[in-house]
Image (cartoon, rainbow, N blue to C red; front, side, top):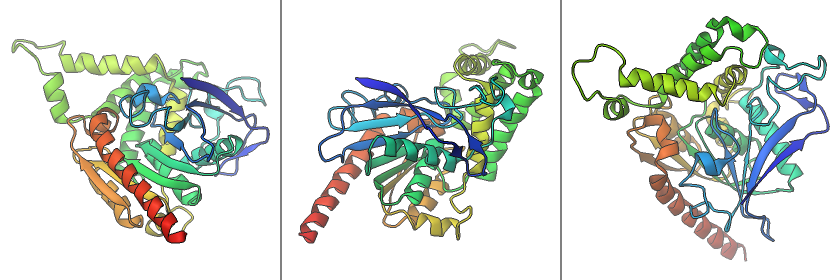
Length: 352
């Protein structure tokens, strides 16, 4: 059903900072086929620790029988720069030393994600993306791409994301990095360096992804006589260990730095003026009780992107609701896509 591939860029890849990376590789997966008109591309931008297998982590919205399926669409999801799922990252080999980069890896930004994926889109011969969609860090990437290449993106869906990362969000990320760097093995230049720190960082992050109500309904004790070994404590340990089994502290450290860098107004006239450059039919979805990306941030996007539609959902899971509430998202996004298709037909009729 899906094809996993690696794109190798033959030239030096220049970062926003001016630094360069040699031998850039981008891991990506595709589902379905590009149609004759080459206008059925759905490009997915993944969140912080996700991979290119969107059918795995956004199941319900993407899948064989889902709204976005390989029979109707050519679906692409590419792993971002710095992530450890196949794209060049801090554990990749530094061609200068022949050893992994570790902390010698150059710092990168969300715009560098976009630059890398622009190269991949060109390599794949994709001139227009029918729909660009992303949530959280993926949404930050999607909004940047829609500004940088406004005419390449026909439709845009931004979920639980923002135009500039907030001081609140940066503070959460810094707290996680403090946990990672408190583990002195992080500086030992070994693949599992900072593992205990990463476990603590994940515990911190989870509190920003979920809500009081979510913990109250899933981690509440069934007895009143406990003084230790609480379910909530076990859950935090479990989630931390899950991440350390599939991710590394160096990628996590750099990716949170990239998230902090997100500001569509950087080197542009202003944040609001940057958002006005978006030409895509846009839907912005916010989660009413999102603790990390408050709904005011999505309302700002919708207010400043021309003719953008806005929808709000409620989820007991808070920010993580964008990955979990797929039935609700399917209804909202399905309606939006039908309306966008009708707009296109009307526009073609007027042109004729």
